Length: 171
Image 1 (cartoon, rainbow, N blue to C red):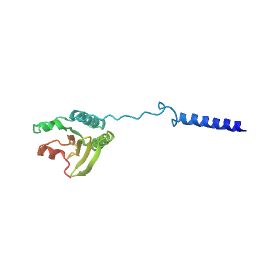
Image 2: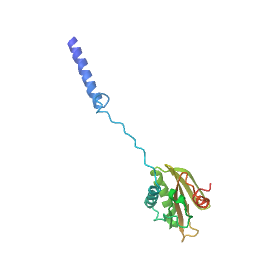
Image 3: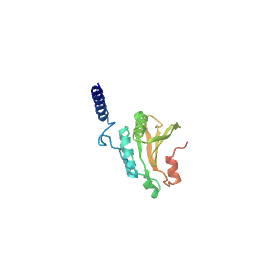
Image 4: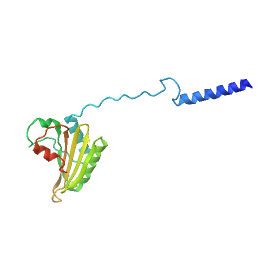
């Protein structure tokens, strides 16, 4: 009788060990998954942000835009700003603008503020030390195009007053 009980206990224990080892609960350290190491993300440069803006604008359905700061005052501030300005046919511009904002959100840009007023839609987003000021202004008449602006400014960037007023949300 004692032999049968010992054999039964041994069989149950062997079965338990087999099941738990197969589940990764018991066994060598090699069976257990290794912990992932998180490498710090590289800083976002103005060039990387400008490329992201242009790519996501195109993916959202907007036409190619102007990525220069032509007509703006000279200065060191240009190194911490990634401008994008464009025009789109009024018919599909609002949808393309919202699709572009959605793409930014899918790429880790978080909405900071969002509102509309005086025929202008404002969206401000943030990501890793940058603010993105997205603007959509419908054309005055159906034949005119809608004006769009997607301008990213690095936190701490010293902008001239005229430039800052053009980018920031007035609310």
